[in-house]
Length: 579
Image 1: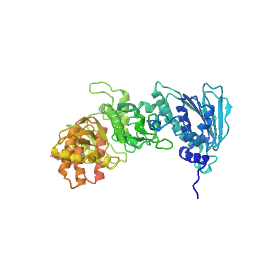
Image 2 (image 1 turned 30 degrees about the vertical axis):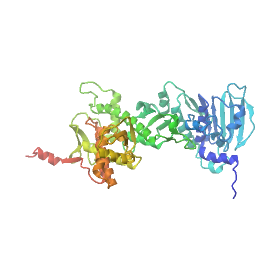
Image 3 (image 1 turned 180 degrees about the vertical axis):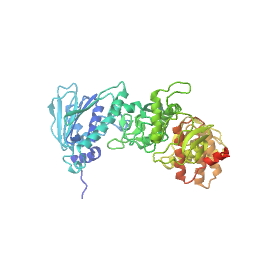
Image 4 (image 1 turned 120 degrees about the vertical axis):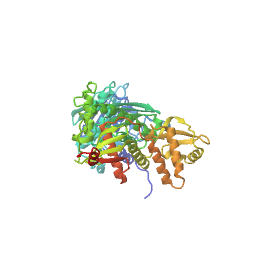
C-alpha cells in the first residue's frame, strides 16, 4: 500500500484517541482553556454524565470572530510561540489539540465574544466538518457545547460507562480543580438541575478545602509551608489518625497543575511509613512550586504527568518536609499518651480535649479497639493485635535509660537494644532504597572539604560515581582532601564529615576484590550514622519499632541479635519466688 497523507478529520480523530478518553477528559480540556482565558466563573452543564451534552460557559477574554476557525485548527494556540515558551510554559493548555480533537468526535458548537465586540459569533462543527462563522448573541466570554460524544466513532462510544459512572469521574476532577483554584466560582448542573456550586474564596483557601473534603479533614490536617533550593511545598496533610483505605484523597499540584507523579507519591507515603497502620493511605492536598524550566509538562498527551529535571532533589525535599511536619505531632501524642484518663497532667494541668481525642484516635488506629491510653504508669494489660494473636516481640511497656526498650509478651519480658535495632532498621532501609528507587542525595547548604587519609582520597577520586550511587556526592579537592557536596537523604541528620570518613574507611578495609563485600561494608558504616540520639518515645513509636524489627527479621530469616527474652520463670527465680 502506498504512503499517503492522512486527511485532517482522521488526524484529529487519532489525536482525540489520546486527548479525549471520556467525558471527564472533555470537561478538563475545556475548563482549563477557560482558566487560561482569565475566567473567574465557569458554568458546567451535563446530560447523561456528559455523554449526551457537555456545555462549558465562562466569563473569560473571549475569541475574536475571525479566529474561531483557527481555534478549531490543529496545533493552533495563543499560549506558546517558540521552544523557549514551551520549556517554561505556565498555562494549563498549550498543545492546540483539544478543540479540534473534541470537535472531530462530537456535534460541536463554539460561541464567543470579547468585551469590546458589539456581538458574539458562533461556529458549528459536526464530526470535524466546519460550518460558517455566524453572528450570535452572547455575553463576554466563551461557551463550548459538545453533544453526542463519539457519535461518529462507535468503537469508542461503546467503551463509555453508564452516565452515573461518567458523572462520577467528572465530579472527582472538579473536586481536584476546586482545591487548586479557590478564587474561581464553579457552578455545575446535571440533567437540567443545579447540582453543585463551589463559591469563590480567594482570601481563605482553607474554606475551599473544607467545602471540598469536609470538616473532618480540616480538623485533622497540618498546614505545610516550606521553601528551600528554589522549591516551595505548601498545602495540608492529614494527621495519621485520619488515614484512608485508598488514595482517594491524595491531591498533588505542580505549579498549579494537577498531576500524578509516582516519585512524589512515594515520598509522601514514605514520610508516613512510621506512623500509619499497615495498609492505610495518607491524605493530603499539596502544591509544589518551582521554576517552570525545571519541570517538563510536555510528556503526556493529556498532561497528567510531568518530568522533573531534579527528580531526586524533589523527592528528598518532599520526604524531609513531610517527615519533619509529622514528627512535630509526636510531641503532642506523647504528652497525651502520658496523661491519665481524666486528662490531668502531673502538675494538675488539663490537656486540651482536642489533643486527647487526637492521641486516643491515633493509638486506636494503630492497635485497634484493644488500644487504650494508659491510666497509670504501671504496666498496662497486654493488648492483642487485630487478628487476635500477640506479635513475636509483644507490646511495649517502657524505655530504660534511653537505651533499652522493654516489652511484654506471653512468656515474659522482651528487651530490645535500641541503638542496635535502629542500626538494623536503617541498614534495611538503605538496602531497600538502593535496590529500588536509589539512594537519593540531599545537597548540603555549603560544600565541605574534610581532610581524609591520602589513600582514601585517592580511592574516593577513582570511585566518585559509585559513591554517588550511595548518595555521597564528592569530587577531588587535593591529595588528602575531598569536596563533599551531598549526603544520603536518609542520613541528613548525621555528621557529614564523620559519615564520609567511616564509609571510605569501611570500603578500604573491605578490599578491592569483592564488590558485594565493599557494598555491604559501606552500607553498614552508613547505618551506624542513622542511630538517633536517646530521646523519649511514645507507646505508638515503641510498638512501631517492634513491628519493624519483626518484619526485618522475618524477611531475613534470622534474628538480628538486637533483643533478648526473659521468661517469667527466670524472673521469678531471680526473686527466689516460692522459697
